[in-house]
Length: 228
Length: 265
Ligand SMILES: Nc1ncnc2c1ncn2[C@@H]1O[C@H](COP(=O)(O)OP(=O)(O)OP(=O)(O)O)[C@@H](O)[C@H]1O
Ligand SMILES: [Mg+2]
Image 1 (tube, rainbow over the protein chains, first blue to last red):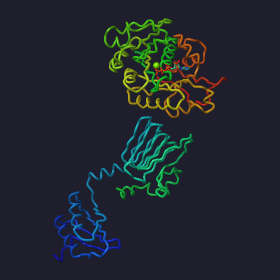
Image 2: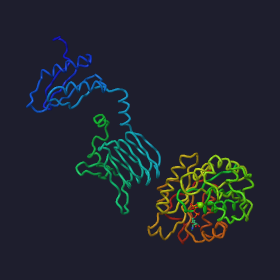
Image 3: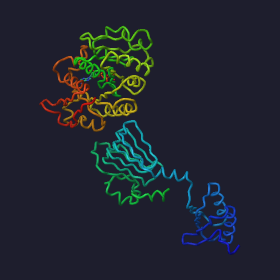
Image 4: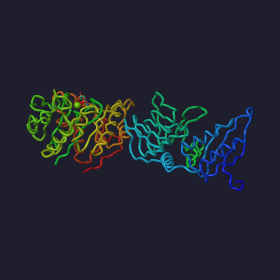
């Protein structure tokens, strides 16, 4: 036994404990070994809570198994799970993730009464007319006149942005923030974008060039891997 | 084989019936055989504007329900042979007309006429669906008001889902002094928003109302601005390239309209 590879390796870091779980043995063995190891690392009641990160390597766990794993950790005093990470995901999850990160291109005028609803980002080559609406779980880019409603990050992504060649929207919505046009008549603006300023707690409309500072990771795919 | 064109707008009272009567008249004046079809069941107007109300015996619902032959229901214009009218029913229910029934009637009319101009009721419900069912092409009428343009946009969106050529636009009842003062949308702005081809513009003109009241569409008159506007629209329908009339008092092109008309088959 002793010369065998460890099934669970525990490392202490400044953020708490990291548990590396061997990905070649059976799941039952993992649970047993984990319980055992944690018992030996018993913490006193007067100590503060310790956060635990679990690294699964190339092991995939379904929801049920994840719950079992959490059970074991919870069974021990003073431990809270911070994260459980695996290097693999199911094909299904990968496809879902891909859909959320894809850009859908469209060539049309979104007219009064019409609604475009897109998973991921949307690039519209055409106008959104007053009374029309374009919505996406990700970002919205309009190559044309945005005169209707645009709603980016509909599932709550406050990092989402709305960019348009010409902005004169009746409403901009990002995640659950809403801003509307003023009640007096205004001229539209060219090459602008809307994003949420979390300090000011509202949607800001600004020059497109500023996006690079405000959302530096916008041009990479990485942000979605991290968010996803 | 003739061609069928529906005149529609979404919003009520913007000039669909007036446009149908005048475009039809102008086309007939140019030697085409034209049949006007009123699909506004219960609120028929086209017969009144054409001055043919007293001649109605059968109507479109009689044809659908086979109380008469299509030919029996057609009313020949009192001024000239080339123009006919198929009147709407005044007392029937809207649901007596169906899209299938319209397709059949329009198909039959196409055998005998060069142009079938269909007057559509306001709204986007059953009446609209009936009127559009038999049409090859569509003309959208709007006035230079925001609400009217909004409804035109809605209708264009719906038309794009039909098996119909991209619609063309008529801006009706333009009041030049209001446009100049910025109290009315200008044509350029409207075309910009709706992004469809402009077929023509018609000024707001008391003569139009007078003529309609006399049952004599203004297009019959030789030289008013409005009749010229309708004749130009008809020439564009025939595929000619005619520049837009100036609405200003001085001669020349309507300066703000950048679009020219291409010839279409
Ligand atoms: N260019 C114009 N100048 C002045 N008056 C006009 C003009 N065009 C239409 N009108 C007037 O506007 C009124 C409405 O026109 P019309 O009946 O053609 O509209 P419509 O769209 O057919 O209405 P509905 O939706 O009720 O069928 C009429 O009194 C008509 O005479
Ligand atoms: Mg009418």
